[in-house]
Image (tube, rainbow, N blue to C red; front, side, top):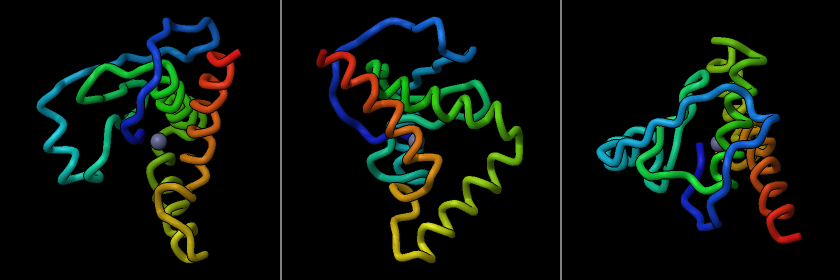
Length: 117
Ligand SMILES: [Zn+2]
């Protein structure tokens, strides 16, 4: 998942895994109820669903999740939920301290750093 944030647009990179980005504005309210209030996108397999277009860093975040899905298959779901439980049990945040989200955030930050150089 990605929280809203601002950054410039950029194109696809050759190292990106295959993916489909689906932008449906009507998902905004639905996801706010079902996922989290500040949600922006959710990745299911190679499908990235978002309620608005993603900038380069946001896309990099979701592409990290596409890679995680590719690496784990359907087991990604219980593993992701298990990570959330582990984070909460350790006093952390279910979302921010989930290692899958930490990895996705690092991918986004890497894009932001290379854009700044
Ligand atoms: Zn995420």
